[in-house]
Amino acid sequence: MIEINGLTKKYGSFTALDSLTINIDKGIVFGVVGHNGAGKSTAFSILATLLSPTSGTAVINGASVTQEPEKVRKQIGYMPDFFGVYDQLRVCEYLDFYGASYSISARDRAILIPQLLDLVNLAEKENSYVDVLSRGMKQRLCLARSLIHDPDVLILDEPASGLDPRARVEMREILKELKNMGKTILISSHILPELSEMCDEIGVINKGQLVAHGTVADIQQQLQADKVIVVTLNDQVEKAISFFEDDPSVSRISRLEKNAIQFQYSGDEKSQVNLLRKAVLAELAILSFKQVESNLEDVFMEITKGVELS
Image (cartoon, rainbow, N blue to C red; front, side, top):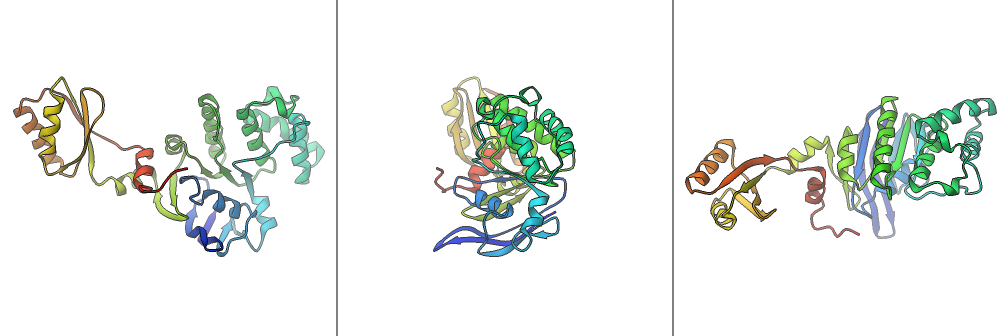
């Protein structure tokens, strides 16, 4: 569905996007993770035919982004990070304008617009002016605008940016519904736990390069070779820290709450059992000893370690 090969964008001596190569299958939700300035928006702008690459190719549903931009625009719905709305239009008029821009007949627009508003939970705002809508409502209206011509591919740049928790949940549920409708969705976000819930695959971009690609579980497994152990104690936390620090398989030990510690452990399962047995024999007051999974935020911080976030 989306084939990106060696996509590069340079501004003088600065490389914003460096040989990006990704293949995205039809009907999946693909999340792009990266700090500000990593190259996400540059890649999305190229795919949306708004920016020309310095080199490389991108093909969407068989159409070249650079050679067949008009054909590509009919295939995609693009929602930029920052977008404008026409404040003096009502919600229905706003969508009607964009429907007419895609040469959709007035008769078809009259049927389509209520359906789109119902999909994005704005049916009750059909006759409201755009400028009185909340940030979350404007985001959903922009999503409806992106869907007006029924594209196969959605390119959504930070669709949950600036939304409150309730609005983020609403946006996430809408995207799930769009996936169920068979849409291929390319989405970027800094709200990493939500990406892990929504996406079939993720790609991590750092300094314009794709540094990790796969399912969330695959990337966690690649980067988290060491296990993370959390130990909760009744007391004697300092004694426990000293005890675990002496084990050569233990590293990066830290105190969590007043009676809990966490560390990375490089030993196998048998060694882990032996470590617990030794801790009990050392009369540490252990209430729990468990291995925990790293979340997507942990993975992101590990991949982009040493990069200054802005």
